[in-house]
Image (cartoon, rainbow, N blue to C red):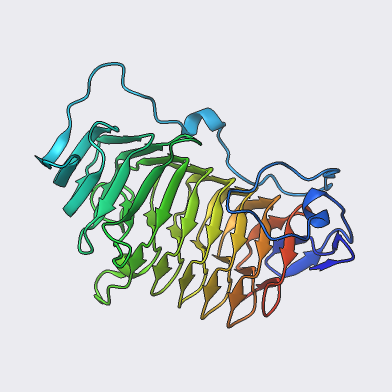
Length: 351
C-alpha cells in the first residue's frame, strides 16, 4: 500500500506466504497521485535498488527469441475469403498469410483456425471485426500482431452492441497436450468487447481468458497494447495463462474496465513460469473472486515491476494481486504502485 508517497509493500512469495523484504521506496509512480492516462504506462521508477538474495526471475531467453520474423517473399492469403463490395474481406476457415490495410476491415464471419506450422501476421492499421459466434483458434502456430503507435491493430466486435469470443492459443493437437508449441507476438494493438461465457462442461477454455486463453506455448510477448471492456465467466477477464515452461513478457500495456467471476479481473496465471510483468497500468478491473488485477496460482520465477494498480476490485482478498503459494516464487518489487484497490492491495497465501 502507499502512505505519504512511499510504497510500503515489497513481497517475495516463497511458499510460506508474503515476506517483507523492504520497508520503503520513493519513485516516479509513487509521486504521481493522478489517475493513469488512457495509454500504457511507460518509464521506470527513479532510484530502483537491487535487492540482495532475490531469485533469478522472469524469462530465461533474450528478447530476440520472442520475435516472429517477417517473410522475405510474398505469402499467399489463406482461408475462405470473400471480398466485400464496400471494402474489406470476409474470412473463415483455416487461415494464414498477411492481413494488411489493403484487406481491412477483416470481417471474421465464422470460426478461423491458425494451424500447426502456419503464421499469421496482422499489419498496422488493420481492423479485425468478429461475428458474435466466431472463434479464433491458434494451434501450434505463430500469431504476430504488428501495429504501430500511430496505427494500432484493433480486434473488436462487428458493432458496439455485440461481443466476440476471443482467442484460444494451444498446442497443435489439443489444449491438453504439449506437442508442437507456437508463438505469440503482439505490439500496439487494441482488444475490446471480447466475452468468453460458454457453459460447455467439456471445454472450459471458452469461458476463461476473455481475449486470450493461452496454454502450452513456446513464447508470448505482448507490449504497448490496450485491453478494455472484456469479460470471462471464470478466470482471467483479459488473459488466462496455463503453461509450465513458456517464457512470457507482458510490458507497457493498459488494462481497464475488464471483469470476470472466477479470479483475476484482468490476468489469471496458473502454473506460470518465467514471466515478466512490467510497466503496465491496471485500472478499474473487477472480479467476484480474488485478484482484481492479477491472480497467480502455483506460479514461479515471476517478477512484477513498475506497474500501476489503481481502483481494482475483488470480492475476496487481493484487490490488486492475489497469489496462492504452493512453494512459488513471485517477486513484487518496490517500484509497483497501488492506489484505491479493494478490499486490499496484495494477498499472498499458501494452500
